[in-house]
Image 1 (cartoon, rainbow, N blue to C red):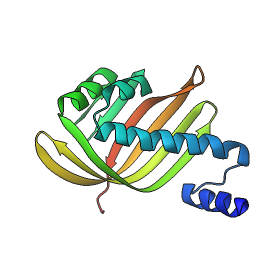
Image 2 (tube, one colour; image 1 turned 135 degrees about the horizontal axis):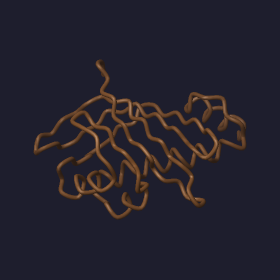
Image 3 (tube, helix red, strand yellow; image 1 turned 180 degrees about the vertical axis):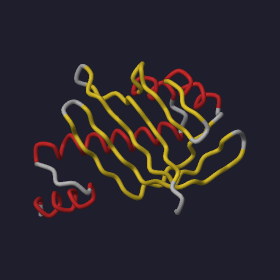
Image 4 (cartoon, rainbow, N blue to C red; image 1 turned 90 degrees about the horizontal axis):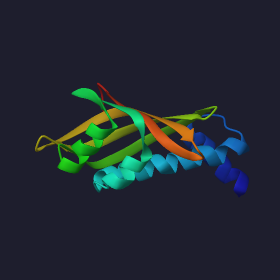
Amino acid sequence: MKATVIGLFIMLVGTNVTAQNTSVEAEIMQLSKDKWQWMADKQTEKLANLFDEKSVFVHMGGSWGKEQEVNVIKSGGIWYKKADIHEVSVNIIGNTAILLNRITLLAVVGGNEVTNPFIVTEVYIKVDRAWKLGSLSFTKMLTP
């Protein structure tokens, strides 16, 4: 049964991983999932702890750093109501993890509810034994 679960996990991730990396990749996927929930719940204290001081955020309408992203979430300028995650992959390169999500995002932007299909790139860096988000970039897909 254990081999079947690991095989299924590898198929879901979409990469060939070693048993050693499986736990790291699972940790990153859980951290990303938690981040989406924290964004939906506007838990800016948890997000501020996750975001590196030099982190960058790329949206359809612009790009900015940690402080502005936290403030946008806190003020409700962007409310990430729900991210339906369709696919996830993780690649580990040294102390860096690159996670790709294919999502449908339900958000409120400037008071208007919108739904968009995105590929989201999340870059995590291990700093002092903790993963920090270094970059979050949204790429709108032309087809859902």
